[in-house]
Length: 333
Image (cartoon, rainbow, N blue to C red; front, side, top):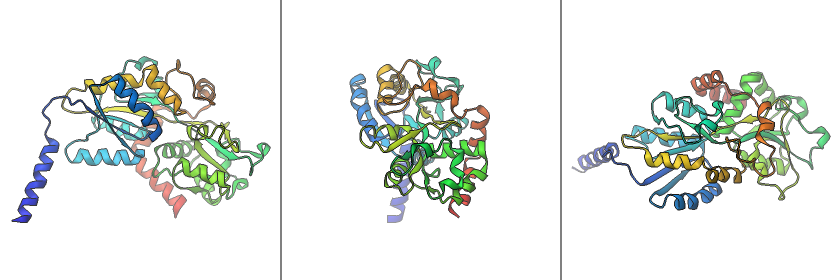
């Protein structure tokens, strides 16, 4: 009898998750990989702009967000209304599976073509940039690295660190971009140099500061936060190109109207919304918004960045799992 009760309870729960009365809720769930201080900056501004809406945030890494949305979808539908995270290839998968709401926000025409989906399924709301960094107490400026490519040279044996592409969207994209240009031999050379590839950007910075690995690839936004706090951390904009990332925004597809989510998406591209992004030391995709404090203009580094092409996006979207498996085989076995 007890077993039957539990089965009925589970079925009732699943049915309630699947049920949609067709009405738009005033509750807006935002699933995001943005840092908590960015969320704390955004929340009161959103509440002031939209007093009629109740904002809820789920904050986690890009991979965790993807896993949560996929799990919720299997159970009848995700709670998320707006997604903001850095794994652009997952958003491509979602678009291909017709799981995103097509909407071209009010600043759509100002966003570069390479930073948005052609059919309006997603767009870049902020731009993180992967650069190199080193500890000036351990590495002289004259001997500092100049390119991503040279980090495979024997000179950098036991001196280099990266975040993990298996858990971080920006680290995965960096890995995929460098693999596309330099092949798997590049990562085999990193392995021979005993490169540490674990954790996120904060872990890499700690290794640079402690001199365990005095050089690393790190997001510029993390380094700019140390301005005036740790002057040993020096930034290198690699000559072979910085890696431009997309903090992607998308509206999930649901059976009811998405007017509230669309209004919120428009706000993120307003001057107030975009300046919240630059206060968190990320670039805006809109040319009219100034660069983060301490950073060069996006127009200076964009022409020298590794290019985003449709071919690259399509290829990586199809072979994401294979890339991770091959990377694991090289770096961790």
